[in-house]
Length: 398
Ligand SMILES: [Zn+2]
Ligand SMILES: [Zn+2]
View 1 (cartoon, rainbow, N blue to C red):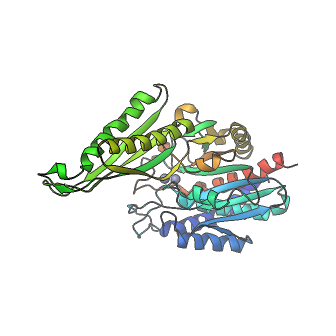
View 2: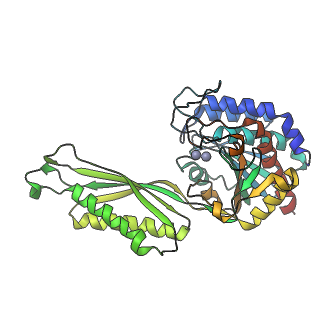
View 3: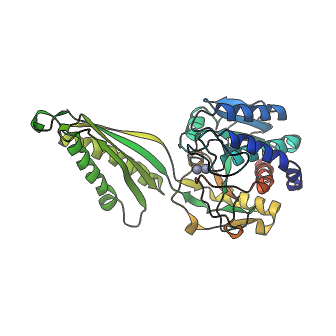
């Protein structure tokens, strides 16, 4: 399959057409009816029998599911709730936008699906193609895990690719951050405080949820400054605090929302537990009741060292030594990716394809309504995905 890059070049136009189609009707969250329908149809046309996961997750198998070895390739398909501000002829008009490039991820995995199908008889094992909703809300991977994506056949290794639209490297280069922890965990939560509303002139007749909330807010600051080692890194930010409607009313309820980021699973678990404990006990101290609701969330992303070495070798076989940049620990960002929930259970890695280079003038960041990605390198992404999967199987089957 050494000629995969040449084969992928031949389907470049098709990849672009697929990507533009998806780009034009971006859908967000867990429910992506049109995107799913499109991907499903494409897979069926190629001869796959896609399996459904939840409302909008899809998976398809290439190769032999009975072989005892399976590698998973994953693309996310969801967009962002923001109005597109580009001048592209295929720009979205529905108020959502593929500003993180998941439209390209989906099209490139479809490309890999097509390449793998034409070499299916040569695959010594099985490739599971995973098309996931709700990455941006950090719930899609967890949903597909619950629905069994890692079983039947059991997944032995997992790989995903993200575009990088504002990179210091040349367009078309592949990059990998580092083995080990390569991205932060992310959790968001909402604290709801229930008091007893009353007239502002008679506070003794009620229970003030604002007073309880203020003290919860202050007490939460104590976790990072007093309970986490100075050399460990964690951020806990309260981003909203809402209560009340008028100067002379003590309201019934108050709520605040916050986010937690860490690079360590144990620290993440510890802080989550302490947020709960502090919320409940401080609320009780002020005679109020409180609860803490966690939305989605993902682990720190862990690149398995062995798969990291294998995959970096395969990419260099395909693209040459210069085709891949390994960035190193200093490049680990405080951003997150919910593929980490898969990598928490199965060894694997995340890699990146440069789809916008600062050297070539790219100066609009990801998640910005004006971002325009370079489609011309999509065939590289499709080829890398298919090649990495087939090489991994070659080296790990039998
Ligand atoms: Zn994103
Ligand atoms: Zn993304």
